[in-house]
Structure formats: C-alpha cells, structure tokens
Length: 186
Length: 250
Image (cartoon, rainbow over all chains, first blue to last red):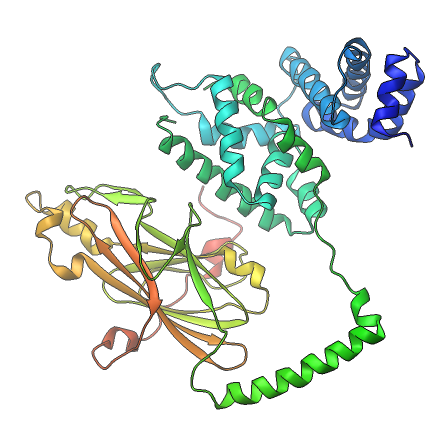
C-alpha cells in the first residue's frame, strides 16, 4: 500500500491511479463514516465517490497532511449535507442518535445575546476536548464526529459498551459545565 | 442552538482531534516478558521481595501502600485533604438547589468493600455498571468494590443535604447563615477493607458556606466513641426489580 505522500504525488501527476490507491487505503474508513450518518449503503457509496472527486479537485493545489483526516472531513461534510437534504430520511441512523445526545446536552432555550454560533462552539469544543484525558477525548470524537455506535467504540477501545455510555454521559455533563463556566447559557 | 448548527460545530473541530481518534487504539497487554528467561528470573526475584515486604506488612498495623483517593463527579477533580469549594452544586437561602453539591467516586486498588456512614444528611449510591445493590436516601450502607478497578469509576456516591433543604424551604425566614451547625456541617466516613484484609478509614467532611457553595475535603479519619452514627445498621438496598424491572414507569 502506498504512503500518503506517494498517493498525493499521483494526484499531482493527475493520474487516476490516485483514486484507486485512495480507495484501497482509506475506502473502508470513509464508507463507515458515511454509513453512520446516512444509514443507507447506496447514499454512502455515492458520498464517498463524491469525496474522491472532491479530493481530485482540490489536490493540487492542496497537499493535505494527514490525508485520511482530510478525506474523512470531506466525506462527513458531504454526508451531512445529503442527510439534511434528504427530507424523507427517517431518523434512525447512528448519526441521529449521536446528534440527539448532543442536542439534549446543548440545545436548550437561550437568549440572543448568549447563543453560540456554530463557529464559536467549534472553538469551544476544541478547547474543551483539550481538557479531557485522551481516552475520553477519543470516545467523544469517535461518537460525535465519526458517529460510531457505542458498541463499535467499545470494541475499538477494549471497553464494555456500558462503560462507553457512562463515559459519554459524563463527558456531555462536563461539556455543559464547561460551556456554563465560559459564560454561555445552554 | 439548532441541530444543524451542532452538527456543523462538531464537524469543524480541529484536525488533530479527528486524527487522534482515528489513530488511537487500546494498549494491548504485554505478555512476552513472562516467557523470557530473564523475565522469569525477575518475577522470581520480585515474588521473593513481595513475600518479604508482605511479611512485614502483615505485622504492620497500617495499610502501607493502600492508597484511596476521591474525585468529584462532573469535574473529576481530586478532593484533597486541603479541600476545595465544589463547583458542581449550590443552595440558596430559599432552599433551591442547583446541580449536585457533592457527588464523588473513589479510586484505588484492590478494594474489597467500603462501608459508608453519613452523619447528618443522606446519601444516594448509584452503580452505573448495574451489578451492585443501590441505595437511596440512606445513611449507612456497604458497597462491594471488587477486583476490577475500572469499575470504581462507575460507583457514584451522591450526598444530598435533605435536612438543610427542608429547613430552608419550610421556613421562609431561615437563611444559610442562621442554620444550626448540624445542617451546615457533615461527615461521610468510609471504612475501607482491601482484598488483603487490611483496612483504612477515610472521610469526606463537607461544609455549607454562607454564599451557598459547599467546601469538601478528603482525609484520614479515626472513628471515636463519639461517632455513634457509624454504628447505625445498614440501610436496605433499593429492590432490583424496581430499578431494573421490565415494567418501569417512564
């Protein structure tokens, strides 16, 4: 399997082999991210293919490092866009459940003055994540960025699902406390 | 904040966090050491040392090395002997509570059981692993901890100042500053028994400050004749069919 640097060189050379190598190396991870959000195999596959096209269109000029995170971000953005556009979608994906958890943690009545913008919240989330120990941080990101199921996270980290749920619950509570301390009413 | 905004905010977190979560894997236990001749020799030497130290330890009246610490739930800050104002809950002069003033868990090694005794107020005990008996509005109870130290994190003790709330709520003219000492001060004694039979006694003392915040400290404790509350019998556990029965009231 090629190194990321070599795959990017193929993109720069405008070789279609770049897509094949990208798919071989990171296709499975990308499909999982898309499936978690969309709960639909066909939609997920299309989003992943669109992400490859997105990579093709942006490399060059970009030389992303790390490549996987760059690609996953494209996949996630495309999948979330499709999810919102697909009004007929039933709320039954892992993404829905994960978003429900966060929504119950963050979305309560606020005044205009104290309401967070998405951009502000991103910055605060980054700061908050830095306050967590590594394991809890990884669990949080796997759950709410990758939209992994609790069972998947537990298997990945060698924990019991119950423990992952408890850790997530505690981390959400800590997030609420953190945002309050930062002066935001949630 | 709208659902879409939350989704967008999470989507835009830093690349380093995303990459860390992708690359992270649980550390596998290292077993190869035990199969090496040098490793075996080392184990034999360590065992011999343990026997020697253990022999001394049995003769010692104190549980040397038996360290137990307490952490506040929510912030996961250690509750130290010096103490600190808890940031997880407050009470007002009208008796209105916010959050949990003192919710904590213990950390340590090889804890067999902990007997909790609360002098003035009430304790709730929640086991998030759902394996142990749980207690509500109890003052004395014993919790089996067991050999899996990872589980200690999930055994939560929630101190509830029921008497203080009632006094402030029922009497409109009462204030925190005017409360009697027993409604402002409390102690939770923890009689800890380790797997090796050694024991230690710790306590969390908690004080209600005039501004409605709570100050807590975790320290060694000697039970004296004056501590009659420790001798009270254990409370009944909440029946498990109520906690985990199929027909729960939602």
